[in-house]
Length: 368
Ligand code: NAD
Ligand code: GLY
Image (cartoon, rainbow, N blue to C red):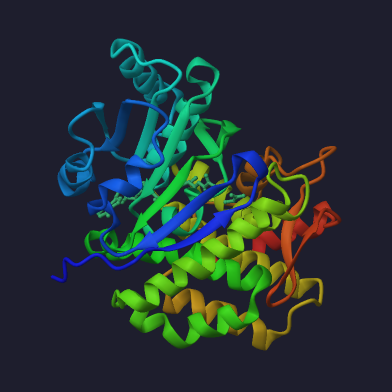
């Protein structure tokens, strides 16, 4: 294994006084100065889970010895643990350690740990600092950037939460070496999403390099992460609290969140549900005569090449989809708002789908 530290590449999320850097590089977990430079004070709580802790907690902690007061909290793993009850354990740990407003939370893990730690930071003593150290591809290209934090509710995905920006995002691309193949595919769904919503050349690049990305080619993965983070950072800078353009980042998510909630959190991975959701969004766009058959085949091929499912679960009928879709956060005035594709690389928000057409579409869409 090559243990030398490459110089990180840094992007900025431009949000005025809440701006922050995204550092991307191989071996960044072993660079204590980087992490230390973003701490708010001396008190630090590292939040991670029982899968990630044995892999990376010691490496991270090595850089935080000496003058700092460092605590760790190792949570159980899994999307089904992304609940208010689990976040309460983070608050318990902070209070038991006597942490004050100048403490810093470090989220070491995937999107579940990042979303919960960010939400805990948003609420603890009305808001303290946190740093994202994402270790899944999905978290590196999406969930660690942009400040959406929160938990699931039995009635809906990510229904409880807050916008709370991290102080920094530190992406060590070497953490992907230990990521299970299925999780890599789930992360690729969000990468493909950026191409589909606004960057056709990036989509073509992904089509060309998908095999080597799945073989963990380090240079290509770094480029995919940087290009994804650049797009996300720009969209977040333009619309931090999702009043407009940021909603486009939800391509596939309205269908996807319905699948995740209906199947029981954790049974379909978030990225898998988003992959299928993006395919369904493309098929619905075709019904509106926005996409041609050749473009549908292209969307299907790139998702399949990434190892993602294209069919809705057999046990989900239209009514099951609609029950969840009616509660989607994007909806206004009881109309279901979807992100659809006017063309490849050209997403739009659409709330004019006739209920009858939508129900028929969901009844007839591809199923396992
Ligand atoms: P996850 O956090 O559950 O991680 C996936 C699995 O990989 C877990 O078992 C985890 O323990 C394990 N893991 C993490 N890093 C590893 C590593 N380096 N090596 C081996 N195993 C590792 O899932 P995820 O896909 O990272 O994130 C999904 C979550 O993110 C969902 O809850 C979703 O709603 C949320 N999300 C949030 C945003 C946002 O903007 N906040 C955006 C997209 C997704
Ligand atoms: N993942 C969607 C967003 O951050 O807005």
